[in-house]
Image (cartoon, rainbow, N blue to C red; front, side, top):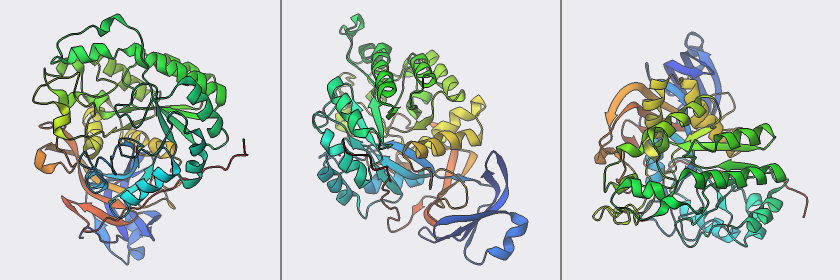
Amino acid sequence: MDPGSTVSAVRSQRVLCGEEIRPAVILIKEGKIHSILPDSEASAHTAGKVLDVGNSLVMPGIVDSHVHVNEPGRSTWEGYWTATRAAAAGGVTTIVDMPLNSIPPTTTLGNFHEKLRAATGQCFVDTAFWGGVIPDNQLELRPMVQAGVAGFKCFLIHSGVDEFPHVSDADLHEAMKQLQGTDSVLLFHAEREVQHPAAEKGDPHEYSTFLRSRPDIMELEAIRTVTQLCLQYKVRCHIVHLSSAQPLELIRAARQAGAPLTVETTHHYLNLTAENIPARATQFKCCPPIRDTANQELLWSALKAGEIDMVVSDHSPCTPDLKCLDRGDFTQAWGGISSLQFGLSLFWTSASKRGFSYSDAVRLLCKEPARLCRLDNQKGSLIPGHDADLVIWDPEKEFMVKEDNIHHKNKLTPYLGLALRGKVKCTIVRGRLVYSHGSFSTQPLGKHLFIQHKTPAPL
């Protein structure tokens, strides 16, 4: 079946139905899952094109709720065409685009419309959009909620780009008042500037120098602020890319006290460790930083215990020159890691060794990111009525990450040369085959997703 085809049914010996895997046929009508039938009962219902995938595993498409596409304005770093093709090649059927590092950032209704124009006709997978909270834009928040942004992101520290300044406590209180009653969500880059003795200068070519400059206490103090705000206003709050295990106790206490708080971590914090980052290897730099092995094991334990809700890519690409590879200077290099295409495989390579199940993978990579964005009524689960978004993959198959199989615009990634377990074969978005065995549909088949929020009473 050629990429671009409309699929009426998918047959496999391994379909993930809830907690169990069984032979089944997924019937698709008008882009939705119509029913999931035992193979023996399905033949009478499969009049159209049946995609028989043999023993490949079929599960819901991945929802990656943390992606920096950077278009418009920085499309040399990435763009919708390349980012969403990479997503499709990795079994990701929905992305949610961050409000930075595009120019302009998605911080006003007008800028949101500019973003939508840039994305139109370019998306191979479905795409939703985050807005941003910056100083003095609080009156833009409700118009953006009504226009369908998934929620908002803010920084408690310099964001890395001047057009997206970080917020003060006063800004946060203003934003929280605007978001009360909307059921929208505020996402926090949770690091705060803290006076700490470890920030003295070291060799900029050594990763340890950069790591000492952003210690755990910066996350701990930021998350202390977030938990207090969340409890005060009862607005949904979400901590993006948790890298340190130290704040987990604070998070646990806030949730027990009734805070509507969720937390994500990323593939790089679960797969890379500070001890193994070579000198001058600036492709490993990201913020917050990759920490040590002991910390990583605590993150995995928290994931297993349900204390971390989801795993996302935080795909944050740039052009190679901004990584300062020639100088190998960790203090000057852009902080961001590209991994959108490889999230499922990265997760499964490590998680399968730690006793995680396929249903754990669905919870962490599909269901919970969809719930965060209020897309769980149509994305993230294999149930009748939901969009027919499927990833068809071989969990046992190993492959090597090489430049010629990377579909991101810039091929620089710390995963280059790594052997991963779990190879994506096909990706289906709303019943259309967008990716199959290395080939893509000729036309982008994704659509924009607008989130329906409550309309709050006027302030």
